Amino acid sequence: ASGRASITVRDILAASRRQPVPQRGYQCVSCCRVFPTLWSVKTHIQHSSQEGYSCKVYYRRLKALWEKEHNEQEAAAPRV
Image (cartoon, rainbow, N blue to C red; front, side, top):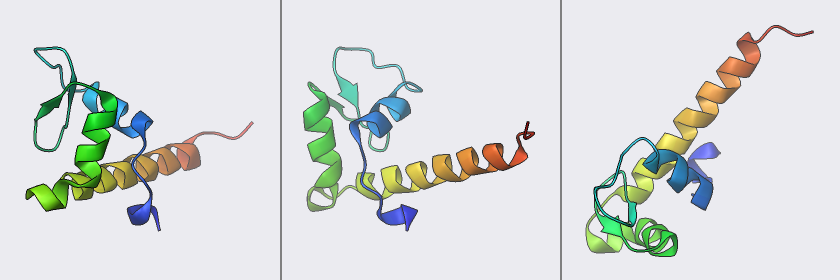
């Protein structure tokens, strides 16, 4: 189910925080292309397969891994 979750702006920003961009803009962490606006990188991700990239698959997998990690951390946290 989480594999079909939509990629949000928050997901894109979280991924890009880990990769500094040498110029102004937002970087697609999957293909490393830099876009001038957050909207343009989100559009790129949504239509990446038409451009020959697999960025949408990458972000979906990344989001699923984050959710799994979050759920494991919650399960491991001591309950008060």
